[in-house]
Length: 152
Image (cartoon, rainbow, N blue to C red; front, side, top):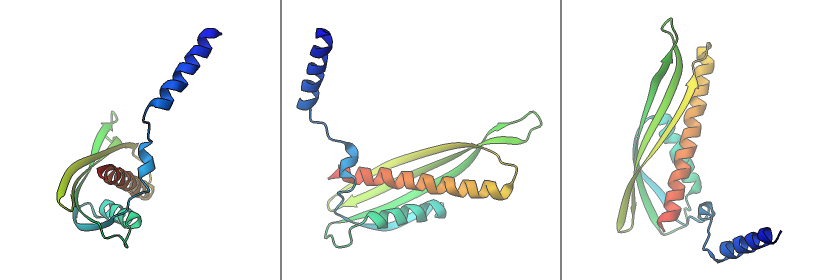
């Protein structure tokens, strides 16, 4: 019993003295106008990323961040059955960002992968793939916004 009390006291004391800050707390505090200078690659993913960035941009701000990015989308066959028909796919999206903020610039790469099984209905598979692209674009834009918040 005494050991538990000492352990709890030690942990509370230790945690209260560290400088813990949640990394997502700065995510909503972006006070920049985000300007997308150019983008190349998959148009569906690029349009979704651009829409997410414009949504987070503060148009009244005087500080401007210029962003250009390139998206490479590949759909890879992961597995086939014994008859040789495709059963599993992997979607791989690599996005290279170039960020220019006043006098400094930064480049970084975001890589997202998603595995899924082939569907019998081609229409449903296309819709599912479109949803996957939208979700990957949301994930990429969230990682970029987080990077911008940390860059301050």
